[in-house]
Length: 216
Length: 215
Image (cartoon, rainbow over all chains, first blue to last red; front, side):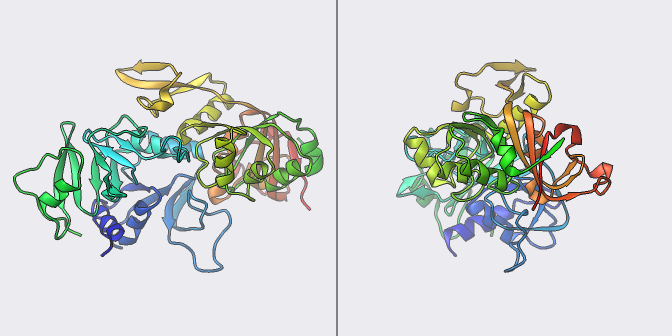
């Protein structure tokens, strides 16, 4: 199983029936593919839709029904649409149960940086700052390292997305959480040892006495 | 409300005008007005829009034609030309969190001086802004945004100017229709009064100054 699929499948296990969930672009988008059909989750697209469905078949796309990246999507029975003020009222107002976002760096205190690399990449924050600030639970789904450098750092060097710490980080190596402002190893990926996780992680991880293997 | 052609509508817009343009990645954008702005070469525009769309679509057309001098938006990452013009300092880009952007516009349209939001507190977005504590929680004072013109795209407009929107093409449109001195609307369909049920009107007719005739 490739890293992205592993991460998406593990994150999908965090969702509960009735949750209102907002998925960011990249690996987070894949999470929807691994939600069991008996689980009734509401997916929000921040351009104004709750109840996003799969990509429509060829020839069935509607020009006025897209995801936040402008790509055609469908709407499930029971879907509803609204304007951007309502959409971000839902996000900022704590009505979104879970947001899953990609990341450039997460640090030992749980701070996320995911919206710019000064001088190199300045796409803008879009809805990310509001999502991290307002969602009830923030999950980061990202690869553990980029170009051989750990993305789990002691202190973020890139501009932060929010001063509010995230709740859970899922990578192809581990699941990590934050207890009393410090990062802790919660699970290791199948076939990965605690020592291997520590070797690829810049931040000082708290290691509990027993670390279970990730279930996917 | 007056009915005008796209040519007449855009002729009212001077160079250097402050424009709000509805739409999200070019969905729900008044494309005919943008085409006409390019044709009439209205320049040095100050644009408020959620994003920069993509080249050739939505407000991307204005950026392709180098007609924009300032852009207030939440995301420009899917338009490489917008990024290039920002790096070359041809466009001054003010990046604003999306929820903050829509609330600043809403405030501008609702007679508020601004809003207090927790979004951005403790990040570089806070620079130059007032931090206000309410019940021990930190908020930023984000000031209201208004513009000279709002360019709006609706699904249905009736002969009076009542508007209804469709699916994800609603986005910033109804909020911007409150926040400009002059509101110009294009619609997929122009229909007799009564076709849009009162409960389904999203933007009330008195907000609309000009409706662009179809066909």
